Amino acid sequence: MYLSQEINLTNTTQAEEATILWANLSHTVQKSNLKQAIEKTELNQMYYENKGREKSVQTCETIIRILKTKLEEIEP
Image (cartoon, rainbow, N blue to C red; front, side, top):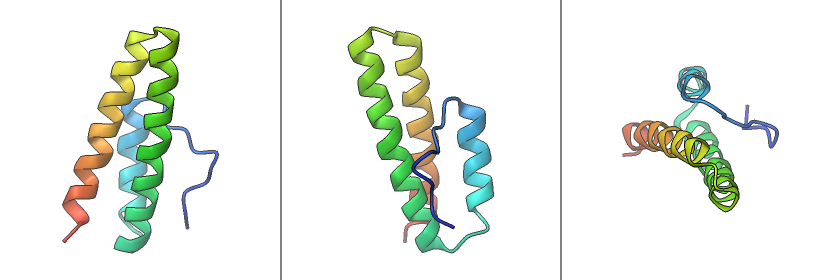
């Protein structure tokens, strides 16, 4: 099960739930999903920065931190 292009993590609860759901997958698939989710959230963050939506930028930063932490946990 790979990350769908339609996945859009918009809050920290969704990010945490996604990492829990993905924990049942192989490390390779987990890493792929996490990297894709990080990239998508970074793009969202840039969009919000351009729109001046500081609260949304901060939310993206938190989501990215959650995802990167999980990625560090599973990488050798």
